[in-house]
Image (cartoon, rainbow, N blue to C red; front, side, top):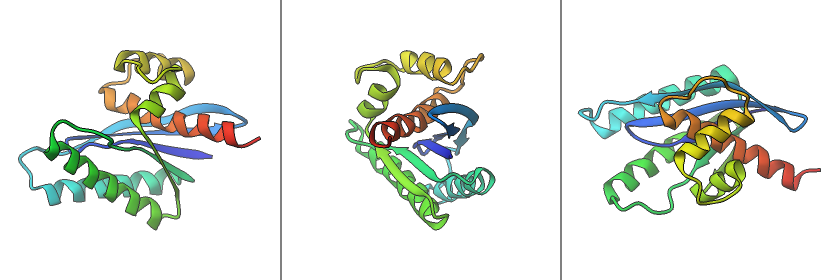
Amino acid sequence: MFVLGIDPGLSRCGYGVINVQNSKEVAIAAGVVRTAADEETCRRLHEIRNEIRLLISEYNPEVVAIERVLFQRNVKTAISVSQVIGVVMVEALDAGCEIAEYSPTEVKLAVAGYGGAEKKEIQIMVKTLLRIKRDLEPVDAADALAVALCYSANRSVVSP
């Protein structure tokens, strides 16, 4: 089963694809969709939509796991991230994918063992769990893989 993890953002939208077989996860792809800050929001969302559509077409995931926004100090950022989440959800539904949403705390708990883990700890655990040798840059790619791993961890808890 392929899982596409998404760390949503308007400037940098992280993605990570893992293959889950027999409770073992293997990293397939990871990266970041970047959009220019000087572009109109609608054009940036369109670019993200196109890239997500390509990723879904290329990897054919059964599940798209998305980190949801619970709280942001900057309202403008929270709105733009929510717009990205909406675009990703629509693309996932159009492709027939299951959608799973997780809070940042749920992702940290699943990957690092506790909900207060720092970004660097998440990066280290993602590399360890997926047996990745090199650093994942930018951090959004590691975060997206962490979201996909969160789906896998939660799936194994509820499924025998």
